[in-house]
Length: 380
Image (cartoon, rainbow, N blue to C red):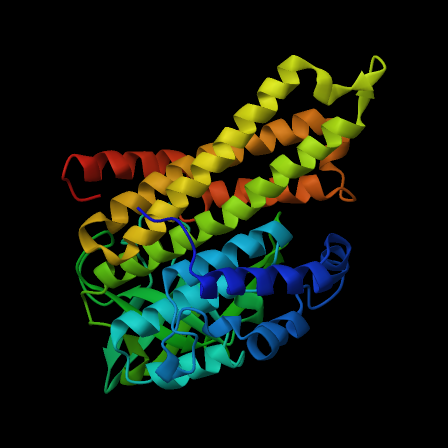
């Protein structure tokens, strides 16, 4: 299995890394979070116009760079290293993924707006009772003439405060947890009947509780097949999970690098604590977790295009990432001491993001159970 990037992918990585180094320092990020709108529209514009990375995974005929999951991995890994809060995952990976894979009639137009930085998507799939079950839906979409009427409550919709569109999963038939009867809709966030309660998450992102109350959409809002959209949802979520694992690789690398540098500076008993053998062993264990996470994520990325292996590979990568986020993050904080969790130190912010990634789309226990079911040949 070839884990080497092509020249074009390496150039993409270097371009993103260089721009972030010059324009997205830790202090600049803190300043952005401290004042409204709590994200950086200027950075988003630069991603679209200066770097062109919002088109990284889209075909050239759509105005993209002709890439795919590996390009998403490259971008997300660098975003993880700089703790980028702008909504690449929700917009490009998830919103773009639904449009690419569904054959939606407006896909070309909407993808063009994504690439231009004009359309921002948020994925409204989770519900208060749903835990990590993508099919556990109380939100309904009922036929109304030539369109649908949506009602329901979506929880912790990451990126919704600055989104222009919501990707909403809803039940069009069947029981609350049935695999059949699920459909996906594109809903403009400003549509009548959509209300939000916005709040910050612990890692610096913004999210919303989204209430849909008699929200009317026409038939063109339907994404993918009516009543049978769960396979499409699972495919896009697998891609999002692996992209998030890519982000985690960047976060974990910075946790390890920052801790290694700190142990060389912090002195105890007249010498750097990095000279103590027990801490050297700890740093090696952290490094091993980082390297295993990178390898598992690369493997899962390559297998995203293999239908029979995709879901199992994504689950395996998420398990490794979850364990690494906990081990590397906790050890980074322990070796820094109490100051590691102060707002002024970057290491605490990386730890918070690692903790959120561990639970995103499903925690380690959830994906371990999913991997076990898939290994036994059962439906997860």
